[in-house]
Image 1: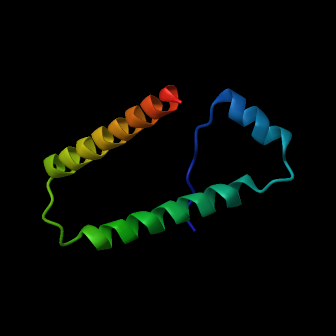
Image 2: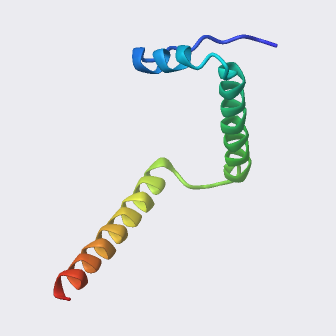
Image 3: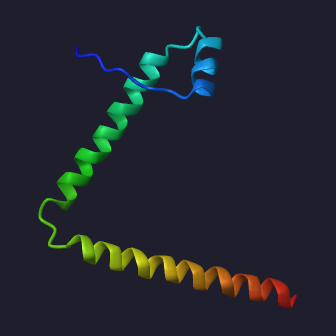
Length: 81
């Protein structure tokens, strides 16, 4: 099995060193494998997609705008009560 090296902030490293009873390598391995599985699934779902990056950005902007509008409406309703 191949090995990798990770860089951690000093704060995180101190916490890891303080908890030697935890198998940090196993936690990192599982997290990486889970993320890789999600990426593989996403690649499979999107392999036939015709969307461009610009399309995705436009959709993302529309979603953000809708969330913003909903939040503004929520705040207006909350303030009116």
